[in-house]
Image 1 (cartoon, helix red, strand yellow):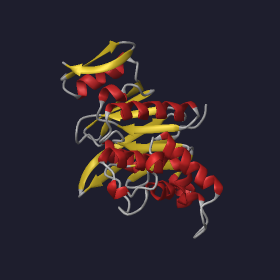
Image 2 (cartoon, rainbow, N blue to C red):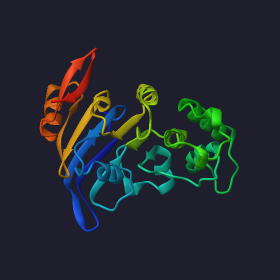
Image 3 (cartoon, helix red, strand yellow):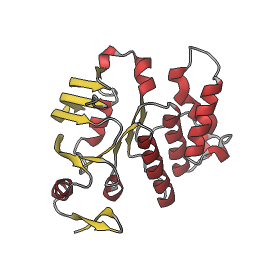
Image 4 (cartoon, rainbow, N blue to C red):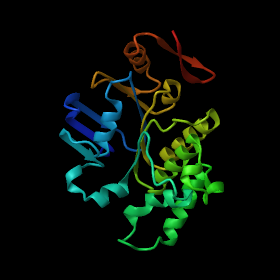
Length: 254
């Protein structure tokens, strides 16, 4: 059996002196899409930041079978890409230059972008339907357009593992559907995707579901597993219920 893409053991993490994650253990499959769901304050974003190496913590995180500390920062940045909430860049940078920032882990210090860098950026911008306004300044874009550019920046890394915290923020339904199709393509190509989503119905399109509550993992299982559905309903105090509709799972008000 191949090593998990990410493994967390005994994770304790705090924010502002308040412990958020309490000895959390988790192992995420490689080559699969895992969605993390739970009520506000469950620790979802904190967990994702720990997995991304962005937050101090106790315990150990392994990335692709190796502890974080065994890789250099550049080596980590090549194999794991991050898209966080309210991410930004200089407002006067063009869309193309923002996406090119994703190629920095692959470039020698002060070197000009290579042909491979330009090809990766074009592919990422086309995948997010942002190529048409590549010369526009980031500051001139709407919230949804910015989100698509920042997603392109993460895609341009061409990392084996992609972590996304609320990637659907400001996206309208057609572009949410585009995002779902993009994630499925990434996974079909052998990549690993981990997302924190508030949209339960969209989260149920994933392969696996992690349900969190009060800084702990309440349940971890397949998205089609009835036990996963019951865990979601329980963690949201039975205010939602999960049903099959038109060949897919949907979360409806209870």
